[in-house]
Length: 453
Image 1 (cartoon, helix red, strand yellow):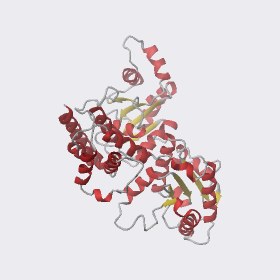
Image 2 (cartoon, one colour; image 1 turned 120 degrees about the vertical axis):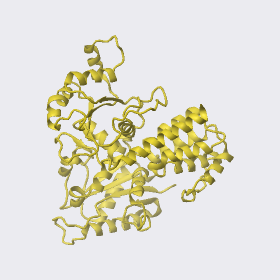
Image 3 (cartoon, helix red, strand yellow; image 1 turned 135 degrees about the vertical axis):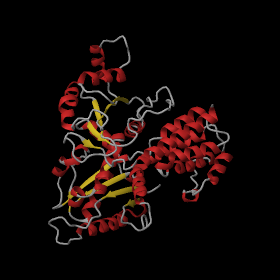
Image 4 (tube, helix red, strand yellow; image 1 turned 45 degrees about the vertical axis):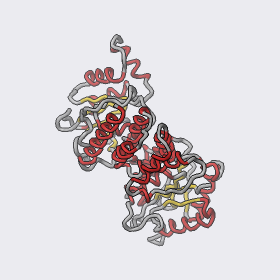
């Protein structure tokens, strides 16, 4: 049986906050002792994923990429809430957001929040960004020693049926499995192996023989891992692989594959922020360069969303990866409630014969995600955020609480926003990311057109 992967989220800052511990490096020692005691108790049954293990991360490693991979690969996650973790660490906030997003998609995923004695308490999770993450702290223990942490892990594992019950697939496993099936249909074993051997850097991908699969599926799984190993390169990898596969995958599967990977470049914590905004105030702010950009793409399938708003569409796909029914309305020059309501009716409700009143009733019954994007950049509504909230958004939210609002702030995400608005972080720092992904997706579509007509 493969080892259970246990991720530990913690603050690596030196203990510069006031606390009850005498040793200023107490949290470092606690983490080190916890890792040692977990290995003593579970040996090779558990693989501890923590950024202080030199065997996993070392100088020169791509820390961001590796930690993001751990967050999708882990079966169980521990969050150590120290004062630095709560008050100073953007990393812990990001990790908690991604882990909470995973749990919202897969409720069986186990998150173990732990409060360090004298530094944190369940009340802390009712404040600031923690209040929208919905981390269940009711049964979370307060710990003092590494032995306390190991006991808490053991208790949670036992409650779930023991380590053996965690043979369930992680999101990474599910994605690899799905992609490998799409690649395998219509191709043959020999060509899959040839393509695999032709790829640069493939030696870095594990080639351990998995005897539970035939050779064709083993090669497909290795190609799938290569395809998504660096999310920002997934679209380029897609074009490279699809060009070299002869015979090619079935056309329908190739289009499904592109849709499955085209939003992976979106930061998972930002996508998680959208999900938790929906459960909180229902209003978030997003920045970028191609948020409302019209493009010349066409839907990949009849169920595919309209391509208007390249970046916001990809963010919504990342937030709701399995939902083909998420809806988007883009408001670029509207200035009052009635105009925005009309845009909502046109975007979310089909049926020209229906009256506005009937459409409003249907809007209230829609259960799949609905997002209204309002352009608040200099060329858009041009209103102060609190004025927009009070005069337009809140009156609409009062009648349609199931609608989420996205406020497009332009190239930068301002620090000063109405307290009711959640800032979607991390922000998009430069236009190259969006431009690169847009061009890579267009190139991938060209490959599909050239190969399938």
